[in-house]
Length: 408
Image 1 (cartoon, helix red, strand yellow):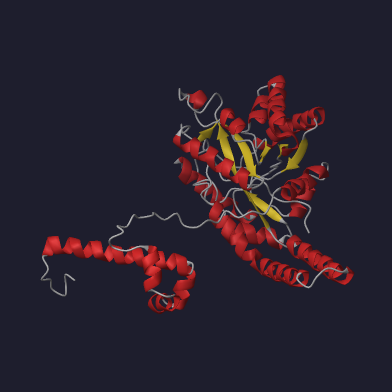
Image 2 (cartoon, rainbow, N blue to C red; image 1 turned 60 degrees about the horizontal axis):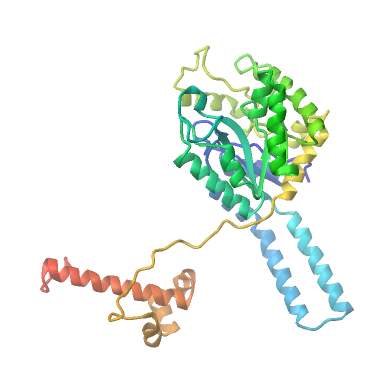
């Protein structure tokens, strides 16, 4: 098992910025032995369901075994209680833990843009975009809170970018894990401006709200490629030096991240061309935006080499992964409920009229099960019959009762 997980990852859903497909990200992480990764697309959560679904499919073989073991425990418990039964149950529970440890964990998150003042102010350059902040959902409540904040960032805070603010962070703080992000984060930006005292005040604010669930993020994108951004690494080193000092002063843990935007090192040039499309610049424009070309999903071995002097920053990523719960974001489809005139029919009346066998014959056994069984299907039968009834009444008015087969 790897002693590191990526917690700052952009997929193709960071539109015209990330180049990595979700399946490729997950497959590479699993192949490297990582126990999970986070998905933190810029300002949006468009990729979360695909990410969750893909990981769920990868974990299905373990979930199937876990389900069987739990059913076995239930059967044994019905036999009574003695030392032999207790030992059998403990052995099964241990097997469940072993299967759970094999699962890959999808950490659902977002790299949010935080308005420098507040999300409602939209008065020129100072309010455009915002500080970067990595926000991870620790549990279902955190996921719901993250959804609310990101939704507000689009509906209330959009100004060049979808922006949240500190008011929203305070309001929806429950169930979240926060890290300080890249050079675009509030603390790194204040450090680079020489505003060390302000940077420390910001750390105190985050620490006061999230305590041990607040982390300072180290990045090292060292490059010697002349066709890449060679200015970022010296800035990262300057910021990292202060972050390490501040971390000790305020007892905040460090995490190592790589600002992942593509899967493999070989994808760097293709990503470079994507950025040209995004910014509307020619490839040979010397003034255009460039990445360091270090933004691939580095393996654990690569990250260990880069952060060999701060190994705790690697293992702290596992601490975050362990804090994150397995939870489901699946839900039933939200379908409208149509009021049906009692004179036409009711569910109770339809249940007297149609048996389970009748519905299976009409809908087919496979579809009957997919739709949810008798109580669900009887309602669908009632609604579909009522729709047919309304359609027929409307046809009578529009076409008359003498209709051709084509109209019918």
